[in-house]
Length: 199
Image (cartoon, rainbow, N blue to C red):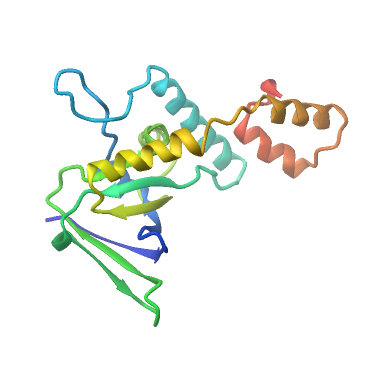
Protein backbone atom coordinates (compact mmCIF):
# COMPACT_ATOMS: atom_id res chain seq x y z
CA UNK A 1 0.00 0.00 0.00
CA UNK A 2 1.55 3.39 -1.02
CA UNK A 3 2.70 5.58 1.85
CA UNK A 4 3.47 9.29 1.75
CA UNK A 5 4.91 11.62 4.37
CA UNK A 6 5.18 15.39 4.02
CA UNK A 7 6.18 18.18 6.36
CA UNK A 8 3.15 20.33 7.16
CA UNK A 9 1.84 23.12 9.35
CA UNK A 10 -1.48 22.57 11.08
CA UNK A 11 -3.85 25.52 10.58
CA UNK A 12 -6.57 26.78 12.89
CA UNK A 13 -9.33 25.73 10.47
CA UNK A 14 -8.27 22.07 10.63
CA UNK A 15 -6.35 22.11 7.36
CA UNK A 16 -2.62 21.63 6.80
CA UNK A 17 -0.31 23.81 4.73
CA UNK A 18 2.24 21.71 2.88
CA UNK A 19 4.43 21.58 -0.19
CA UNK A 20 3.51 18.43 -2.07
CA UNK A 21 5.89 16.83 -4.59
CA UNK A 22 4.49 17.14 -8.11
CA UNK A 23 4.87 13.38 -8.66
CA UNK A 24 2.73 12.59 -5.60
CA UNK A 25 0.17 15.18 -6.62
CA UNK A 26 -0.16 14.01 -10.23
CA UNK A 27 -0.34 10.34 -9.21
CA UNK A 28 -3.10 10.85 -6.63
CA UNK A 29 -5.04 14.04 -7.37
CA UNK A 30 -8.26 14.41 -9.34
CA UNK A 31 -11.05 16.91 -9.88
CA UNK A 32 -14.57 15.69 -9.16
CA UNK A 33 -16.10 16.79 -12.47
CA UNK A 34 -19.84 16.49 -12.94
CA UNK A 35 -21.04 13.88 -15.44
CA UNK A 36 -24.58 13.74 -16.82
CA UNK A 37 -24.46 9.97 -17.18
CA UNK A 38 -24.05 9.31 -13.46
CA UNK A 39 -25.11 12.61 -11.92
CA UNK A 40 -21.90 12.43 -9.89
CA UNK A 41 -19.33 15.15 -9.33
CA UNK A 42 -19.87 18.84 -8.71
CA UNK A 43 -17.36 20.85 -10.75
CA UNK A 44 -17.89 21.95 -14.35
CA UNK A 45 -15.36 20.61 -16.84
CA UNK A 46 -14.84 23.88 -18.71
CA UNK A 47 -14.08 23.73 -22.43
CA UNK A 48 -11.25 26.26 -22.05
CA UNK A 49 -9.51 24.17 -19.35
CA UNK A 50 -7.02 22.42 -21.70
CA UNK A 51 -5.90 25.76 -23.20
CA UNK A 52 -5.61 27.37 -19.77
CA UNK A 53 -3.63 24.35 -18.53
CA UNK A 54 -1.21 24.78 -21.46
CA UNK A 55 -0.92 28.47 -20.54
CA UNK A 56 -0.05 27.49 -16.95
CA UNK A 57 2.60 25.04 -18.15
CA UNK A 58 4.02 27.81 -20.36
CA UNK A 59 4.01 30.17 -17.35
CA UNK A 60 5.94 27.61 -15.28
CA UNK A 61 8.50 27.26 -18.10
CA UNK A 62 8.87 31.05 -18.45
CA UNK A 63 9.44 31.39 -14.70
CA UNK A 64 12.07 28.67 -14.61
CA UNK A 65 13.74 30.10 -17.73
CA UNK A 66 13.91 33.46 -15.92
CA UNK A 67 15.28 31.71 -12.78
CA UNK A 68 12.12 32.61 -10.81
CA UNK A 69 9.96 30.33 -8.70
CA UNK A 70 6.45 30.02 -10.24
CA UNK A 71 3.69 31.61 -8.14
CA UNK A 72 0.83 29.16 -8.58
CA UNK A 73 -0.74 29.88 -5.20
CA UNK A 74 -2.05 27.13 -2.97
CA UNK A 75 -4.21 24.39 -4.35
CA UNK A 76 -7.06 23.48 -2.01
CA UNK A 77 -7.32 19.74 -1.58
CA UNK A 78 -9.43 17.29 0.39
CA UNK A 79 -7.75 13.97 1.14
CA UNK A 80 -10.68 11.58 0.89
CA UNK A 81 -9.39 9.17 3.49
CA UNK A 82 -10.76 7.35 6.50
CA UNK A 83 -9.28 8.12 9.95
CA UNK A 84 -7.06 5.02 9.88
CA UNK A 85 -5.43 6.06 6.57
CA UNK A 86 -3.71 9.22 7.79
CA UNK A 87 -2.06 10.80 10.82
CA UNK A 88 -0.31 14.00 11.88
CA UNK A 89 2.67 13.80 14.23
CA UNK A 90 3.66 17.16 15.67
CA UNK A 91 7.30 18.13 16.08
CA UNK A 92 6.83 21.03 18.49
CA UNK A 93 5.08 21.40 21.84
CA UNK A 94 1.94 22.84 20.25
CA UNK A 95 1.95 20.25 17.44
CA UNK A 96 1.72 23.09 14.93
CA UNK A 97 4.46 21.76 12.66
CA UNK A 98 4.92 18.07 11.96
CA UNK A 99 4.65 15.23 9.52
CA UNK A 100 1.41 14.49 7.72
CA UNK A 101 1.37 10.83 6.71
CA UNK A 102 -0.97 9.06 4.32
CA UNK A 103 -1.41 5.39 3.51
CA UNK A 104 -3.84 4.50 0.76
CA UNK A 105 -4.53 1.73 -1.75
CA UNK A 106 -3.36 3.71 -4.79
CA UNK A 107 -6.67 4.93 -6.26
CA UNK A 108 -6.94 8.68 -6.67
CA UNK A 109 -7.80 10.17 -3.29
CA UNK A 110 -6.70 13.82 -3.35
CA UNK A 111 -9.79 15.74 -4.46
CA UNK A 112 -8.83 19.19 -5.75
CA UNK A 113 -11.47 21.62 -4.56
CA UNK A 114 -9.71 24.68 -5.98
CA UNK A 115 -6.97 24.52 -8.59
CA UNK A 116 -8.03 21.86 -11.06
CA UNK A 117 -6.72 23.79 -14.05
CA UNK A 118 -3.46 24.45 -12.21
CA UNK A 119 -3.24 20.71 -11.57
CA UNK A 120 -3.56 20.08 -15.32
CA UNK A 121 -0.89 22.70 -15.97
CA UNK A 122 1.40 20.96 -13.49
CA UNK A 123 0.69 17.63 -15.23
CA UNK A 124 1.66 19.23 -18.56
CA UNK A 125 4.83 20.76 -17.13
CA UNK A 126 5.80 17.40 -15.62
CA UNK A 127 5.11 15.54 -18.88
CA UNK A 128 7.16 18.11 -20.84
CA UNK A 129 10.09 17.76 -18.45
CA UNK A 130 9.85 21.41 -17.37
CA UNK A 131 9.65 20.24 -13.75
CA UNK A 132 10.57 16.96 -12.08
CA UNK A 133 8.39 14.81 -9.87
CA UNK A 134 10.26 16.26 -6.86
CA UNK A 135 9.26 19.86 -7.66
CA UNK A 136 6.91 20.90 -4.86
CA UNK A 137 3.51 22.56 -5.14
CA UNK A 138 2.02 24.48 -2.22
CA UNK A 139 -1.35 23.21 -1.05
CA UNK A 140 -3.86 23.62 1.72
CA UNK A 141 -4.86 20.07 2.59
CA UNK A 142 -8.04 19.12 4.39
CA UNK A 143 -8.55 15.52 5.39
CA UNK A 144 -11.80 13.59 5.45
CA UNK A 145 -14.25 16.35 4.52
CA UNK A 146 -17.69 15.14 3.54
CA UNK A 147 -18.86 15.79 -0.01
CA UNK A 148 -21.15 18.55 1.34
CA UNK A 149 -18.22 20.23 3.08
CA UNK A 150 -16.14 19.97 -0.08
CA UNK A 151 -18.89 21.54 -2.20
CA UNK A 152 -19.36 24.31 0.40
CA UNK A 153 -15.64 25.06 0.17
CA UNK A 154 -15.81 25.12 -3.62
CA UNK A 155 -18.72 27.58 -3.50
CA UNK A 156 -17.06 29.79 -0.90
CA UNK A 157 -13.83 30.03 -2.90
CA UNK A 158 -15.44 30.52 -6.30
CA UNK A 159 -18.48 32.64 -5.43
CA UNK A 160 -17.17 34.76 -2.57
CA UNK A 161 -13.39 34.98 -2.91
CA UNK A 162 -12.78 35.23 -6.66
CA UNK A 163 -14.62 37.07 -9.43
CA UNK A 164 -12.01 39.80 -9.81
CA UNK A 165 -11.48 41.61 -13.11
CA UNK A 166 -7.88 42.27 -14.14
CA UNK A 167 -8.26 44.85 -16.93
CA UNK A 168 -7.47 47.80 -14.62
CA UNK A 169 -4.26 46.17 -13.39
CA UNK A 170 -3.15 45.56 -16.98
CA UNK A 171 -3.83 49.22 -17.87
CA UNK A 172 -1.81 50.42 -14.86
CA UNK A 173 1.09 48.13 -15.76
CA UNK A 174 0.98 49.31 -19.39
CA UNK A 175 1.09 52.95 -18.26
CA UNK A 176 4.09 52.25 -16.02
CA UNK A 177 5.77 50.39 -18.87
CA UNK A 178 5.12 53.31 -21.26
CA UNK A 179 6.54 55.74 -18.68
CA UNK A 180 9.63 53.56 -18.09
CA UNK A 181 8.64 53.25 -14.44
CA UNK A 182 9.13 49.49 -14.09
CA UNK A 183 12.36 48.06 -12.75
CA UNK A 184 14.03 45.25 -14.68
CA UNK A 185 13.06 42.85 -11.88
CA UNK A 186 9.38 43.91 -11.96
CA UNK A 187 9.31 43.61 -15.75
CA UNK A 188 10.89 40.13 -15.55
CA UNK A 189 8.30 39.02 -12.99
CA UNK A 190 5.37 40.55 -14.91
CA UNK A 191 6.40 38.91 -18.18
CA UNK A 192 6.19 35.49 -16.55
CA UNK A 193 2.53 36.18 -15.72
CA UNK A 194 1.63 38.05 -18.92
CA UNK A 195 3.34 37.62 -22.27
CA UNK A 196 5.34 40.71 -23.26
CA UNK A 197 3.20 41.34 -26.34
CA UNK A 198 0.09 41.49 -24.11
CA UNK A 199 1.50 44.39 -22.07
